[in-house]
Amino acid sequence: MTEVNLNNYFLPYQVDHILDESPAVLEEKSRRIGITYANSFKHCRRRNLIDYPRHLWFSSADDSAAYEYAQYCRMWCDIVEASVKEILEPYDDVVNNQVIKRNNYIVQFPNGSRINCMTSNPKRFRSKGGDVVLDEFAFHENAGMMWDAASPTTTWGFTIEILSTHNGESSLFNSYFISNFLKVQRGEATFDGLKMLPWHHRRTTIVDAVNQGLAEKVYKLTQPDPAAREKFLKFCRARCRNEDQWNQEYMCVPSTEESTLIPYDLYVACQMADCLQPAAKCGKGPFYLGFDIARTKHKTVFWIDELVGDVLICRAVVRMHNATYGTQQQMAEDLINQYNIVRACGDATGLGDMLVEKLQERFGTYRVEKVRFSAPVKDAMASRLLGQMQDKRRRLPDDIECRESFHAIKKTVSANGNVRYDTTQHDEEHSDEFWAAALCGEAANTAADIPMCYVA
Image 1: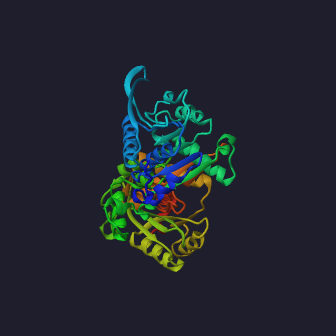
Image 2: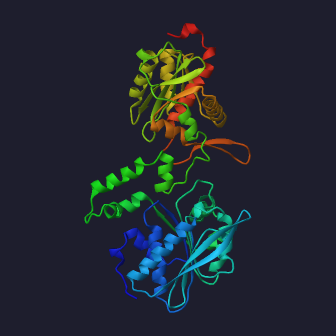
Image 3: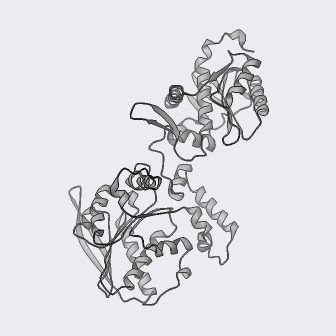
């Protein structure tokens, strides 16, 4: 066997993967960064460095992926001048009481080791022993049965690797393995079985890969090129339908579409391309204002709706970041005057309390209301906004920040029945636009109580 210089073939994160000899590897990975490619070399190399049989059982989500892995193995064996034999082992797979012809692709080494590349039928792991690689584990149809069948394969001192891009929050890969591993790290593990396995957690996003030379490899460049890296990331991002797809396919963040309060399809159904209009170009109203106040970490958002028939049409979304309270107060006053706001509701839970009081002094408590966020209040406002969208009684801007803000809201109910609204994706995402819109809906809902003599 000819030893190869890994740096001639692989990027640093791939080399790290190849040299990782941990008995249990849990790897979150971006699409198309060559982790499975590197893994095939890792196991060919391992079998060429020993003088005894050590089998590998590789399973991916479909037959074509198993075949591709076998071809990678064959290529590496040619490069390192290893003498191997390819074997095609046909077998019958029974799915939903139907017999399907499958193939087990085998690369056999002179020392008796075999790399077996199979589909994702758990039965294929029964009565087997050796190292295990479960590739794209989140996309296996029977992931739980696969784990149950595959994990005992490693009982006699063999290794197991679970490699996958994410496939939603509820996939076994995320809900069991990743979440429980993180609990182990935090000392919160309650299941000793997972705690006892010496998992090595790896995580490689597209940004990590690009920072280590992926773009240059794709573009066949010989020197680091920041412009090429930026171009490549923009190209990957541009192909994604939304932030959720970008996060899952490339950034190792599971899709929140299953758990979000406002799915993308629902938001898009309520979009109106030209709804944002200056006051002079709008109808006669009435107009309502909701605002969520922040200072540095999050945004201040002012949201204005016009009621047309029984539909609330968004007419303005004004965002301010790191603005002084005086500047924010002036903006609120200008908007109230420009749109002749009938009623405004502002979050007075914390930082907004002083601003709402100043506006009440200027416009009166009938036109400006303090809303203190509590679990019941947030539940009522969020449920109202959701219902209006489901009934198509909201028109929302075709704006990515608004769309992501709405999509980031997640409703959870605790064991004792308490309702919480959290964000599904990032710590920095506070869903400011969503809550400003919900406060605007609160203003419209309570506007009937306002004596019209108080409206300018």
